[in-house]
Amino acid sequence: MFDGNVFIKDTCKNVVEDGKVIGFEMQTHITYYRGIPLSMINYLKVAVDGEEMPEEDIRFTPDGIDWFTLKEMETVSAIKWEYGTPGTVRVLRKGGLSKGHHQVRLTVCTRTAYIPVPLEGNMTRDVEIA
Amino acid sequence: MGIKASVSLYSLQYQYLQGKMNLEEIIAFVKGLGSDGIELLPDQMLHGTPEPTEETYQMWNALVRKYGIGLACDDVFLNTNMFKNRELTKRECISLIKKEIVMAHRLGFKTIRLVSMVPAWVIEPCLETAIENDVSLNIEIHAGLGFGVKKTDEYIEEMLRLDSPYVGIVPDTSLYMKRAPRVMTNYIAAVMGNLNPDLIKYTDEVFASGTDFFQLNLKSSDGMDPKLRSMIKSPADGFYAANISGYENRRLEELDSLAKYIKHVHFKLYEMTDEGDEYSIDYKEILQYLHDHDYNGYVSTEYEGNRWVLPDHEIPEVAQVTAHQKMIQRYIKEIEG
Image (cartoon, rainbow over all chains, first blue to last red; front, side):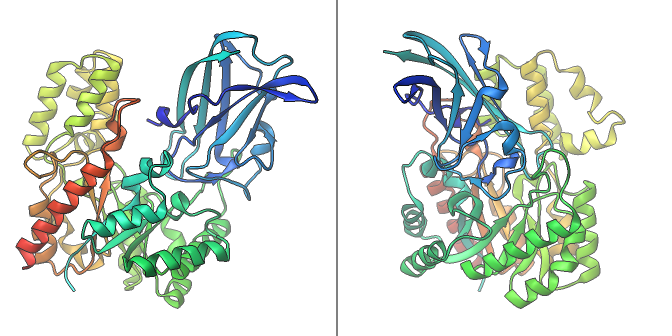
């Protein structure tokens, strides 16, 4: 239902820190129609060329200010992921994505106020690393 | 007084998400349609709710003044499942709703729509705050989550017991559908594959006979009408059956005894036809009913056809909302003069 919100086109890139590629990241909108506290993100998943990235290597920021692991987000009720503000999903992975084309799949799942089933959205994009 | 036309900004959520219109442009657009008011989901288009900054309040109040737009309804949600490991306690829920009431007042709203499934026990402890802030608390009665669903029935019971002008209902016209939304059928067939033609035919028959699958499913011991179940031959059929069960085809007369508690109405929109009517819902009949029952309030366009647009296709929010408002305003004029 909210697949179209997931994984904003042309946002996937390697992340360089102190001259080293420490991973890769992409931006996404929320799989819901309103902003919610981070504790209501049920899970985030990233797969590269069919390979699921380890959950503990995933980091998220709703606004570029604070970064959290998935486990940490479970208790974050005072910071919201606002509707219309892209969040950034980062995967810590030495060397990031190698040069060439990759099929990167992002899954975003949120719990909602009245719908008993969490709302999952996913999107696979062809990403080219120059 | 009389019935007033408004637009829920929910209807324009993709214009906002995709950065095509900001909040001011959306308000200006609605004003330009000749609508009397707007309905807002603060969690959608304001930041930091239910405790936004003073700057946010100033920005909002300045927009409302600038465009002279009426404030139809504030859509409130209760995040009972805020945490993975537990439900919020009663005290936490009551505290959140009180914050929402204070925010609604500061934003200028007098009517709150509480999302379906908000527990009835929040009302009485919040009533004093509602009265102090002159904001009414009204549960949404939505197809699939409305009459016959425990939490909604309990809310109505509590509303009748309290019998306060500050406690009411917001019926949603997904309760009054004459036929299945064609945009849904077409979407599922395009995305998931062809649907069993017998399933479509049976759906048409059920709706034409004056009932719906939500009500038929309630009568079945395993939660689904056996004939509907027998026609599910593929995942597409299953998805269709699940979704069609969330639309109801009730009689408006069921609202008679609750009419005085109606504080706001959601006018669902799935698809406007070339003839200028909604494909599934008879709005002339509904507006006539509201008029005959002395309803004096807003009716808000709530565009949900957005869920049934193919990925990477333009969502026709602007055109659909425009046509729906034209229809509503035409019927109000016809009926009320």
